Image (cartoon, rainbow, N blue to C red):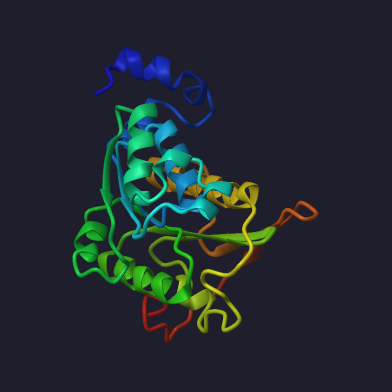
Length: 247
């Protein structure tokens, strides 16, 4: 646990941002964030939430570390090939950020224990790679009243959607998913995944610390091919099966 003196020393550079003071830092330090998906996107989110001083990180991700993961997953090292990815991520975060409580669960999103973890969080970051799993998380969060940030990428493109009480949820914005989406076959460049993850981390910090302006009710889309960033308005679906539309 950081003392007030060590806290102000550790986070001196962010505490000097107008509107971000000790109150915001304490809120961040008292918060729990669950990250579903610890690949290139979720790993970057976890890294920068930990660096910013989040109090507790819950990492949820099934599967073992494989060679193709290493082009983007900066929490991994080659000598850990074959080990559970979520454990590798927790190990690296523990080395760099020992004051952050990190829990690792090698679970699928449909694990019956996951809703209990979600309900215990202040924010959920959805970095999973397919719409069926994203819809499951979306509904879990809606039922528990937990805000979430959805981040995804494909080749040089990515998007980030922040969902808070009363704002359009994932299914409002993408009611049909994407039938052309290839869950494990889409191209990935590490810098693009990292960009999506960093944007998600920033949104999570803003929501948890009550700092700045979240992008709830807007979809952020970017294409790093030509550095095109756009923020598009979103609408509530009055018949949404997940969030129920307008409250």
